[in-house]
Length: 239
Image (cartoon, rainbow, N blue to C red; front, side):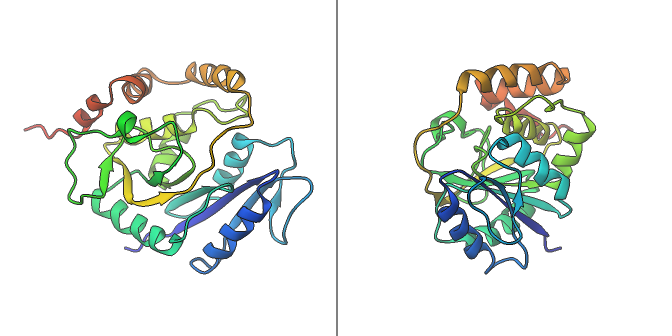
């Protein structure tokens, strides 16, 4: 079965040109690309305009509301890549080969560097593929099963603005469902350094979300953040 991948791009202030370039590239791959826009001063025909006051969580919630495919592809508007078509095809292949819940390319600037995320006790069939604790939420592909299970668990993102926690929760759910989270080192996304949001606020918002997590998901997220090799235990076959 060929996975139906549905692409979403998030645009915000000072990223219009890059978001347009990504959209143009993805329109060579997909019949439809949805751009969720948080820039009051720039837009394109067909973009969904949320306004300057909307940050990552509002954009992501909008994407989830519109998503009706097999896999949600999310791209932040400040990135660059020259092999989008190949990335999409590789996502289809590797997600099916590994029954992965989440697939992502490598990001050249991210907190989630290989030394903090690769799970070495997991052996893949391809040198470029590694199971990781969390791949970043800059460019990633999320299977509908993982999204539905997160919804079923009623994780409370209602007061989350800046977006910390979506990646941890979705990765945690994927591991609980015994669906690997994989990173493809054959692709490297160019991502500028620096952030323009309040990290203290983001951390407080994430702490509030944790109150709505079940014990099993909290435990899995603890492994993601501090003892990632334990995540391989979810895939140990028992007699």
